[in-house]
Image (cartoon, rainbow, N blue to C red; front, side, top):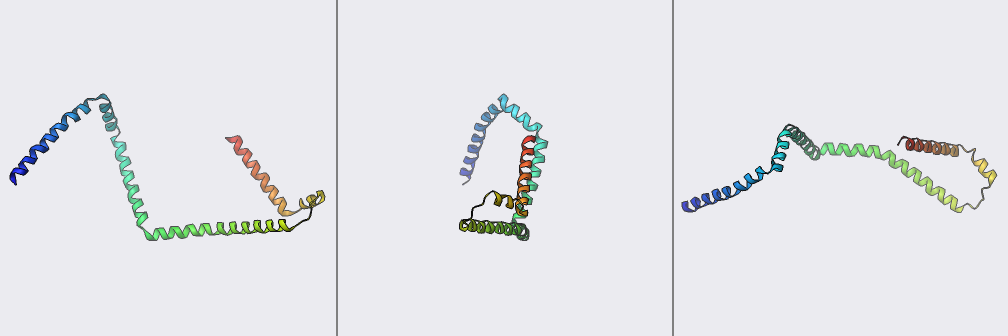
Length: 144
C-alpha cells in the first residue's frame, strides 16, 4: 500500500508541473496581463458588489422561507385586488346587459334623439372623460 501512495505523489507532481508552463504562458500574454490589471484595479468595487449580492441573497432566502411574510403578502395583494375585481365585474356585467338591450331594441335614433341624448348626465360625463383622455395623450405626445 505504501508503494501505491508513493506512486501517486509523483503523478500529482508531474501533472502540476505540466500545468505550470501553460499557466505561465497564459500570464505572459498582454491581453491576460491587461485583464488582470483591470481586475486588480476593480477589486474594491467587486468586493463591495459581492457583499451587496450576498446580503441580497440572504434577504431573499429569508423572504422565501418566511411563511408568515408570504401569507401576509398574499393577503395584502388580495385586499388590493378585490375592489378592482369587483369594479371589473360591475362594468363587465353592465356592458353585457347593455349589449343584450341593444340587440333587442329596434328603435331608430334620429337627430332629435341624439340631441336629447346629449343632455344625459352620464353621456356628458363620458364625453368629458374622453376629451380629458385625448388631451392627456396629446400632451404626452408633444413632450416626447
